[in-house]
Amino acid sequence: MQQIKKQIVTDESMRPIAVLIDYEDWQAIEKILETYQQHNVAPSLASYAGVLSLSIDPLEYQQQIREEWT
Image (tube, rainbow, N blue to C red; front, side, top):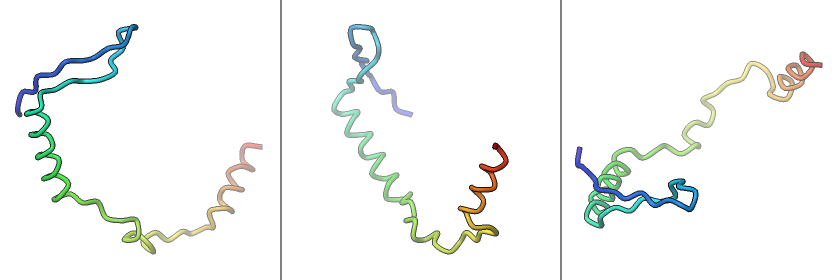
């Protein structure tokens, strides 16, 4: 893994609020992220439609659970 030089920016209370990195390091990170996104595209939610089958109506289940606590 490539070593990245960074500077941590803090507020008056010494809490970290930002990180500064060299522009060349940023360009390398962008290339890595581009490659990752091209190969690991997440499927849309539509691809899961109809995959899940429920044995009970969700509202009925919610009512049953709530009745257990009363």
